[in-house]
Length: 225
Image 1 (cartoon, rainbow, N blue to C red):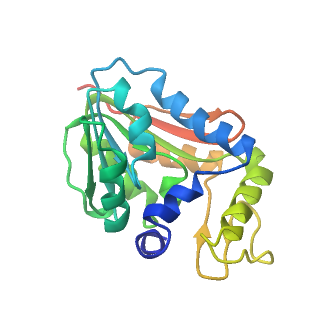
Image 2: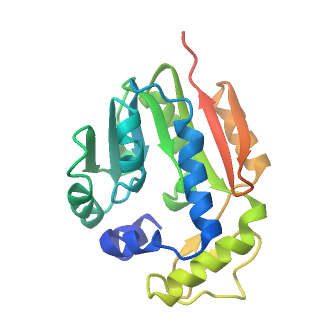
């Protein structure tokens, strides 16, 4: 799906995804940002994976020292630089998550809005790279959808298909937390057990937290020694 975002669902199309008319989806999007922002003190250096055009970066910019966003889509980054022009502490760049080599640079790493699914590849590999980017004592946040949000998630993706942002939903294949479109788009999710297993595999302290009955978060704490 990384190629899908790079080639199809990017820039203005991606922006339109988040101009939803579904109040419950708006609540979900706000709740994710509120969850990660409640512990910020204004001094943090943040890295966001799969930042798109900078939607989350813009919301967090007033609350942190600096925020770097990376995304595989050149079009989204180009669009995002204009979107973020009034946020001098934001730096959005084209980079493949699976090839990033940040090391001990950030207080917080974010991979929100079901990012581990969107980026494909081995999710543990993405998590491990994220931990490597953290300073000792830093935290990494990874979110996926809660099973309780399935009805609203389906409505949101149908809204996107109706806008022509995604292909027609394949209702025979769409089930068990997975949304499949006839143009090749596919979105999976992670269960609480999946996140628990990923957390254990890091060897670091972690928590799995449900937020707003819409998101599941894996929060990994990098050891401070």
